[in-house]
Each structure stands twice: as structure tokens, then as C-alpha cells.
Amino acid sequence: MIKNSGIKDVPQFDKEKLPPNPKILLIKLRSIGDVIYNTAVYTPLKRAFPDAHLTVLVERPSYDLVRNHPDVDEVLCFNKGHFGQQMKFYWKLFSRGYDMAIDMHEGTRGAIMCFVTQATFRVGHKFAKRSFFYNVKLEFNDLQPKFPLDYQVALVKKLGASFDQITPAVHLSEVSRKKARQILLDKGVRPEDPYCIVHPGTRKIYNQWQYEKFARLVDSLSSRYGLQVILTGGPGEEDQSQAVIEKIKDTPFAFVMADLQELAVITEGAQFAVCHNGGYMHLSSVLGTPVIALYGSVHPRVWRPLGARDVVVYKQLECSPCNHRTRKKECYKGDAECKEIITVEDVLQGVDKILQENKESQL
Image 1 (cartoon, one colour):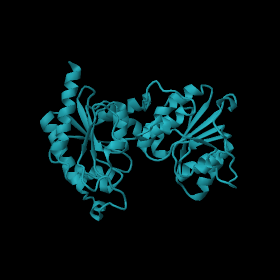
Image 2: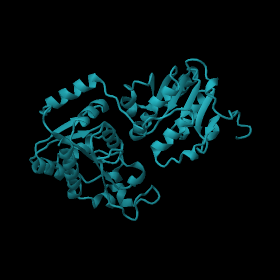
Image 3: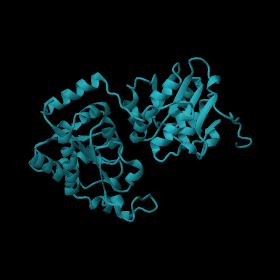
Image 4: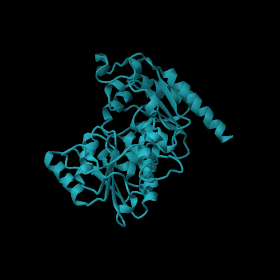
């Protein structure tokens, strides 16, 4: 405990001290992949506290991932606006009168949000750098977490939740399903047409596979396998998608820019998806669509996709994994060697593997 911090530690969490129908806030900021993993704790948490009103706090890009989850009563979105907007949001957190706030973000912002709620129980990891903002500091080394999802599950287990199985889940609305079907029809893709997805977007330029390779991949998927190819992009990825489109020769393809829910529906119906490691990769994998994931600056040991049929393409160079201190200057120009040495044929080998498994599963 930090002396003179003004924060009184609760020695341990006592479920019986929660009031009837408690208000619980679950804080999970950051990226799409983090939030997708976090969906695995919603149902066990609600089962442990069946009368609770569960609010999940995420950032705007992740809203579509959680808004239809049956065990989430409310979703709050934090927008990084100007100072006044942020203060209004913090006031909202304080005024809601939460009984328990759980910080599963562990960054500065999430810890401050947890503290601002002034909830009776402000819960976080004992060894988090900013644990002095919590008054319930849980240690779960005895559960031996290894991967990011394990840490989230372990924290909730220490609150008394139990897991039949650890399964992230993204729930898609019927409205989104109808919109997605219409998008495909408008692009000339019929429901019975087998199709695959190529998703070239990535947030980091040093994680970018070369655009001409994506274009050659589109050509090969059409000519070698007879598949309809759908090139997809999310918000902010228009330029990357357009760079690939300009390099595609005469191969027919459909290009779809869609919101996350509609993109998820389209992905769910694909034979497989090819993409970088990142949020879309985790989305595809959790939806059950096999993914061929291109890794470079990040080691797949920790952030690999969860599906049994997923394929990871990774060339383990001496400099990989890297960070901002060890990364080479040329990588920031989009010429990262770890992605440069991944060939189209490497990806097609993954396609062969997945399609063969698809055939065997249908026998």
C-alpha cells in the first residue's frame, strides 16, 4: 500500500459485501484484438453476479464487438476528444455510482478511470505499475497465466467466476446480417458462391506486407483455386486497399469497405481470410473462419490466432520481435525485412492446407 495516497486498501474481495443488483464496470481499452479476447469473461462474470448490471467500457473502434453481447447490459465508449469532453466522461463515471470497477486495461488511463469511479471495490492486478489506484489488488500467479487471454481470465476467476470453457465470442445482429448479405449481392457475390477474403490493412507501416504481393495473391487465388476473392478494408484503411487494387491486373474481385459488424458477417461466410497479425486476424479466428496470418515485428508465440485451423506465416529473423528501440530505420518506410521475405507461395501453402482440411471435414 502507498502511504499517504488517500487510497484505503480492501484486504480481499468479499462478494457478500456487494449490494443487491450491483453496478459493475469492466474497463478494457486499447485495440480490437484485446477487446475480442476480453469477451471471454463476460458470461462467467455475469454468471458469478447474476443480478448485476454489467457495463463494459471500450474505445469507439471496439464498440461493434461488444454491443450485441447478451450478457452485457450497457456499453460505454471513450473518445479521445478535447480536455473538456474527457472531463465530462470522467464525471459520468463518477456519477454512475458503480459498486465495483474492474480495470483490465492496466494502462494509465484505465487505472485512472477505475479510481475516478470511487467504486467500493476498485479491482486490478496487484503487480500492475499503477496498482496504487486500486483498493482490491489481486494476485493470480498461482493460476500460471502465459498469454494475454489467460491474464484476463485469471483476474475474473479471483473474483469468484468459473469457466466451463474459455471462449471469446462476437455476437452479430440480424440487422447486420441482412446488410452484409445485401452488400455481397450488390458486389455480385451470391450466397452459394465460395469466396475468400484478402485483408491488406494494418495499423503500422512496419507491419505491412508489400502491396504488389497482395495483388499477386489475388490473381493466384482466382486462377489456381477458382475462388471469388473479396478484398476488404476497415475504417482508415482505404489508402492501403486502394494501393493493392491499383496493382491487380485483370483478375475479377469484389472490394468491400464496411463497418465492423457487417465485415464480421462477410468474414464468417468465407472459406478463409489472409491478413496481417492484428485485430482483424483475431476477429476472423474467433468467428471460426480459418485465417492465414502474416507475422513480422511481433512473435506469434504470444499473440497467435486461437483457431485450430489457423496458419501462421512467420520468418524468425534475429531482429524479430522488435520494438521502437531495436527496429531498423528502413522498417518505418514500409520495407521491413521480416515481411519482405514472406513470399506469395508461402501464403498459398497455407491456403492449400486449409482447403484440404475443409474437404476432409466435409467427408
